[in-house]
Length: 257
Image 1 (cartoon, rainbow, N blue to C red):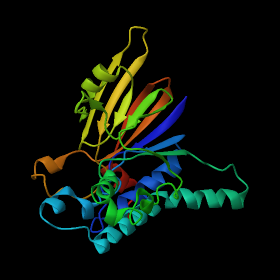
Image 2: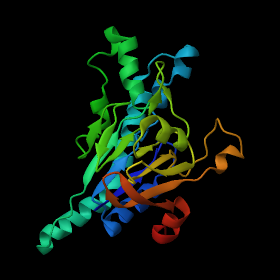
Image 3: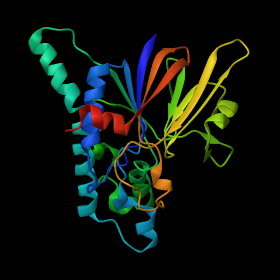
Image 4: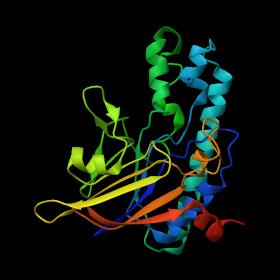
């Protein structure tokens, strides 16, 4: 059996607080999951939003660079405790802890790809997904909307349904449409569904898309009360697992100063 840690959408922006990434990083070191999966939408990339295009605002290199710099700083804070721990184990001649790091690209990161496709003459070779530095930081990067199966669990930023490729919006629908354990981000809060296949194997679907401290400007005060946190998947084997919600408030109490 193995243990997976799922970190939902971080939605980093330059003006947003980043302390929760320090807390999650320390949680990784303390609990030492075998696999860490980032949901995608780690960076919001508002400099490339479709709203700006509709409002007549063109690509602005300065704003793009701020988004990239912020995302890299956020990633450094998330992985900082792990890198420090790994350095300490080397110096102490102790076994090195090296979890598998997997990141499923989200629709916000995909803004970079779409911007280049929409204006190749201006942006081809100028901006790219590599600017985010995910692979350089040690992540196994999975393209947007491409699932990856790890220990029988399918991970993807969101799963699609129908010829139009619309996101599946409920955990119960995920089980019905995909017939296996699935974990996705993209939507605020959390939704979990559990069932058994005819052969008795347990299958569980989770949609959880919020790991940040800020409130979303486009949501009203009630909608901004959604759950925020990470999810530990214990006893993972052939798609079966025991989920444990770890709230942002818990991480703050445990690791915040």
